[in-house]
Image (tube, rainbow, N blue to C red; front, side, top):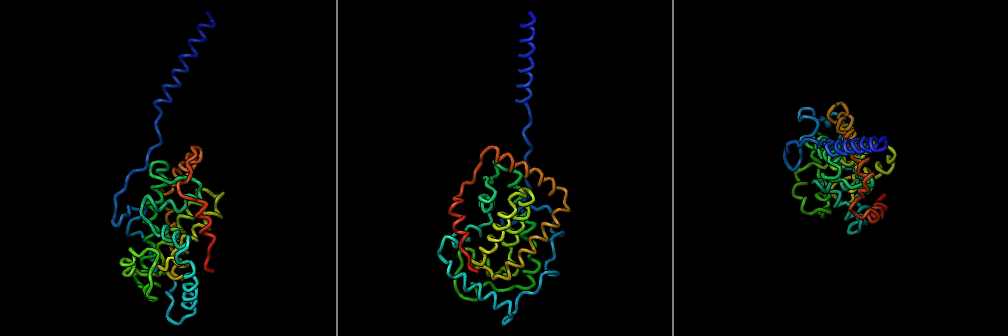
Length: 276
């Protein structure tokens, strides 16, 4: 009788645990936020809180200056990469639309970054693209520098984008700000991958040189704009909460074996090519 009684208790406890497990709530998904135009969604900062980068970015290089001479030399060196796999990677790095944009860091993180698999990380990157991407625009609009393909009279790795780029100042580089800012955010989420993530963030900006879309000094200035935006984001409670949730996303993705969908070996080979 004791055996039967024990068995019944065990069955009841097991049933109770199964019921609790089946009704357990899944992690809450991030809330959708409105689009503000050009495929960008509302960031963690309001438009009034965006940085005024013209106040602290150094002036754009002037004609015949040593800085412009360096820009010219580096621009000439990048011509050797035209048509190579590094040129093709630069074209992929130029795509800031979602879901394509986060894939730039998927190989370095070693996980798949999608709205379905890593919803908090995906939304974090999408919203910070707005905050970080707007950080150079005060200086961009102030200096209104011409891009290298406009000065040299040749093309870029993304010809379809050239019309829009002609009316968008070259200095500082917005793509670089985003890539560098994302690298800083991701190193905070995965500090054991800091070296690799920073290297990819640097390469993301240098893709703009390879693409013939930006001068080297544009890229250097873009990094400081991206870093400044990330620093300011840390004063936002909503951003910090999203960081915690994104960190959990990464852990779950690793546990579930969600590996990148792009060819990481080919990307690594392309990144070995340099113009320095």
